Amino acid sequence: MTENTMPTDNRLSLSTRAARNLATTTKTPPQMQEITSRHLLRVLPWVEAVGGAYRVNRRLTYQMADGRLTFVSTGADVRVISAELCELPALRGFADADVLAALADLFTQREYEAGQVIERAGTPMDEVLLLAHGKVDRLGEGEYGNETRLGVLADGEYVGEHMLVNADARWEWTVKAVTACTVLALGREEFERLLTLSDGLREHVQAYREDPDRPVNRFGEAEIALAAGHVGEATLPGTFVDYELGPREYELSVAQTILRVHSRVADLYNEPMNQTEQQLRLTIEALRERQEHELVNNRDFGLLHNADLKQRLHTRSGPPTPDDLDELLATVWKNPNVMFAHPKAIAAFARQCNARGIYPQTVEFNGQKAPAWRGVPMLPCNKIPVNDKGISSIMVMRLGEKDQGVVGLRRTGLVDEYEPGLSVRFMSIDEKAILSYLVTTYYSAAVLVPDALGILESVEVL
Image 1 (spheres, rainbow, N blue to C red):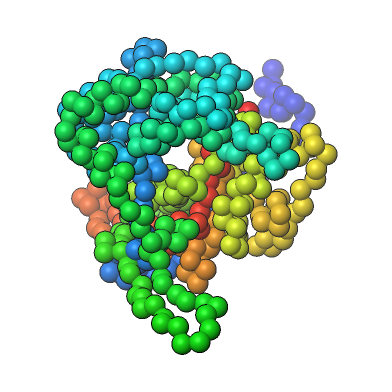
Image 2 (image 1 turned 180 degrees about the horizontal axis):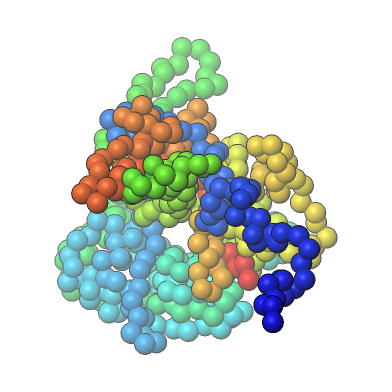
């Protein structure tokens, strides 16, 4: 009996599986899902930071305490960190830790529901309120008697601080809870009682009360004395422009990694694609992604942490509305160039526009269409975080040194420079025949004047 050697599937020609053994496949370079458009790196004007540092000189500014306070909680009990009370203008520079701790103990915790009025306009201001959690509206009377929203306050902010120095102060606006709020309150009687017990605190507050107003412009900068509109031989004022004595210096940050490639791979498997080049390409992509993340989130120079507190706004109701973006653009009203938002925040804004029957325009930006509001492009940036509650931020900025805006910092002309500001330096071949390359990039970002960067916070994107 003869053995049957015919294929079991009765094929009449060579199978594709077998044919591939003699063919060269068409293949793509290695793909990488982490790669994004990195618009921030593309639009930032890059400035050479020779010497690894960049000093931002400004006019002398008298900075009032306008920061935010920090709180700690144990279960449902919330306390203000005593040293943080120095953020209140009247306590700025007060250093007695024991007295500050005693003052922190005098605050009592209150809870308010959404829509509840906390303080009413016209009533005596007899307490300081620290907003530990939640969001409140400041409501006032408009020109024609209607109620007008004057602003929004959120976590870490405070109201009623004038009570500390003015016994006759009255509330100029109504404070109303937008969401459920946790508030710490300090009454006038408790504060006055502590003043009688602490000579240091009483002298500090009294010195603040008697401090004459410094001659400043509306931006808090030391005023330049000028004369205008005079006639005859009027005596002209003398003046000079004072500078900050300790201007901020931005040092270049660094992102590095060591790329390792086995010499056998580099020698034998470089056709049709150079293995070392492909390894290097993907490494550089990851390094650039990290660079953009640091420019947004680094606590030292990242844009989200370097916006002036007066340049931070909160959404009126949660989702980003056209009204919110109008207020955001007003913070950088002198030639705003671009906005950045997480893709989910852009989608949330689009939903609000759809609900109102508004269709935002698109603009041409770097050869592609981009959504825009009031002519300012809104570019996606997934490095802006979205927390587990669906809260994010939107940034708007003015760009360039000439316009006193936001600039990126880098150093080019490096040894073994592979791209501007990025070097690839051969290190060694070890005893296992593995080649090592040091991949390095130096970078930072600087905000030249406070009104170059504005941030809309508490943006709900879900």
